[in-house]
Image 1 (cartoon, rainbow over the protein chains, first blue to last red):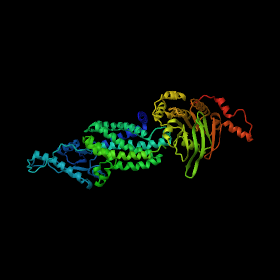
Image 2 (cartoon, chains in turn blue, purple):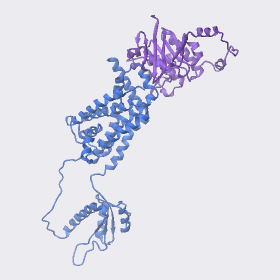
Image 3 (spheres, each protein chain N blue to C red):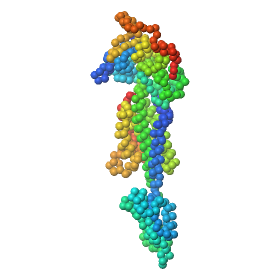
Image 4 (cartoon, rainbow over the protein chains, first blue to last red):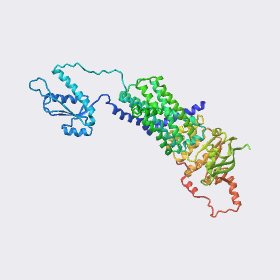
Length: 369
Length: 252
């Protein structure tokens, strides 16, 4: 038993060392998911505040019209395209969906008419058929702003009104989904793509066969690899986690201990798939198609790149049983919803169930050459 | 016979209908260097691999130190060392780590530097295996096979692809191993190597052993049948010239 332990720790230690000497492995395991994080993080960063791409075309000389244009330029809701100065240009851009709508202030807008002491006029919002919803929202926002101005000049009675109030309860923003999905993607990468490339290569060179002439047992070799890959995986996940906190304001709501334990269990389960595939395959040509077949459904259906709630119900049910789904769900529950150990028991149960099946298969199909 | 450490009886390997090894029998005495000669495809490697417990035995039996290979492969693995035909090691690994790894496979801890010293590689202990030459890799492989002090050492074509200097160096190494009391079984298709190293040789062709004796006796027997070389044999050959000109010093 003590001898076995020495065998396992030596193999695990040297395996891990070897990983950190391999620039290509570091790139694909740690840097590559980080690149995804920054791309997806940047895409979801402005989420939460709706904004419209508009052109403002001012055909009026009034001072009110000018101040309206200046206000629009500094507005958070409007992104004003300053290059567009004519309606024809604007229409061209709306056709290409580069603009959501065009606000035209017609000649005379904001002029103070004779017999009154306040500015008046009617702004026009132009939009294309496919941007109807956005244009209507924009129109009502403008109307609200005008109402405020109107109220300053004319006393209005508003017997019916509506106001929006926040419930104060935080809801998941898109980055929260991005984060758990990316962690799932990263675990899938280091758990499957790594071993599927490594083992056939070791077999091709006869390195595993050589170990087979020694008393080294398959289970010892498996345990050592699981340990080293778990260690490497924690590094990869830590890199993603720290970057998310530093650059994308990720708030860790759950316990770190639960998080680490859950990540380790996830790596253990998913790495089993890689061990089974890589341990079975005699060469790369055998490994590649089968690993694609196994990983692609998980890549698209387990909530890595887009949330599962967007899927039809039957697909949600089916994809819920994929091994990667509890990984993504569990991480989201712990990190962004602050759920505890007991709350993620269903996910852990599913992972453990898969582990039993996966490792039984892996032992069965492993070959040294 | 107590002195026979390896006993092979009727050993057979079939691939489909073809018998690659066809019921061969021989024994190897404790402490000798035993050579298996033969052209490519004669079944040498398959024979070795069956005795090494990495290929299944289809018929007959093999035993090492009175342990049946087919029945107790795991026990056999503790007492043998195996040098494969073209030794390869996982890259990004230092020489001393390779030794540690192999020792750990037997659950043992060794001094890697001492093992590397035995094969003249102690200066390269901290280098990566991918920076080794062919001869150095062979020597590292030998050190890795001997970490657990085996009783029998198998070498499959150990000198194929080596330059004459590295080859001679390896021969010396094999003789040193024999001096430690380790029985050596090797395959080769270099006949002068067999003549130089082996106490006894088995000549294999098409899966069967067609002759088995000491090199001297085999030659004597052939001459006894009235064999004469067509060409007059010089007292030296081109290899002697080569070694005389370039020296015996190892180049890697």
